[in-house]
Image (cartoon, rainbow, N blue to C red):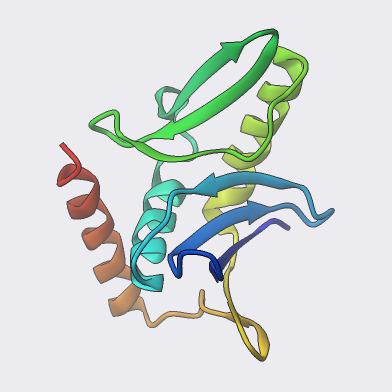
Length: 140
């Protein structure tokens, strides 16, 4: 099963997340956030939008393929971590994201290693879901 990993950059001190498969392949990467909570809000949006076909903008550049994951208001939530040599490779990555992201646990990297964050109380999970959509609509 894939998992979301939240980590803090040593270079700019921003927080980022990625979706990593059980084989260690990084499929999705985020922009930087000021706090882990910003990552959690975006991850909640990714989980909610993963199964929607219109959530993905496919991009071709010099024969390589990438994708951006879009919010309801067409703002970029996160982007593919790699460029793909074929359109089929891109579609395989998107299919993996569609099936794995909704149930993927969330881990935050700390000095002690990765700590699971996805065992949130239902009320907090619902609050984060509402905050994620508020966050996405505020991007316009």
